Length: 61
Figure 1 (cartoon, rainbow, N blue to C red):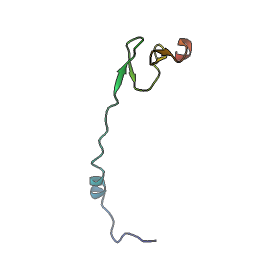
Figure 2 (cartoon, rainbow, N blue to C red):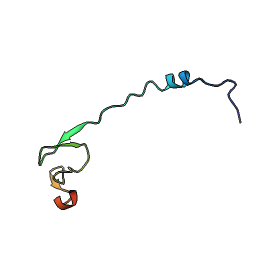
Figure 3 (tube, rainbow, N blue to C red):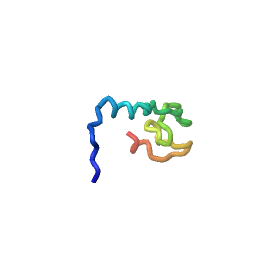
Figure 4 (tube, rainbow, N blue to C red):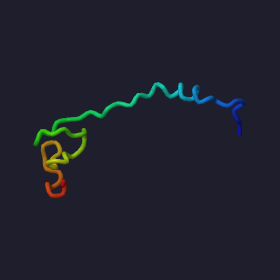
């Protein structure tokens, strides 16, 4: 198998990874209770998803 002739420095390695930027996740507002919820997730407060009950309130707590 081929091996590199020279060691790649940590600075050069890290420069290659600079294009990646961590982003803050986007939140939506629950249509039932109005709390902030991550997209495509069941609301942890009321248990609704897209205006329909997905899980019971007792299971959400």
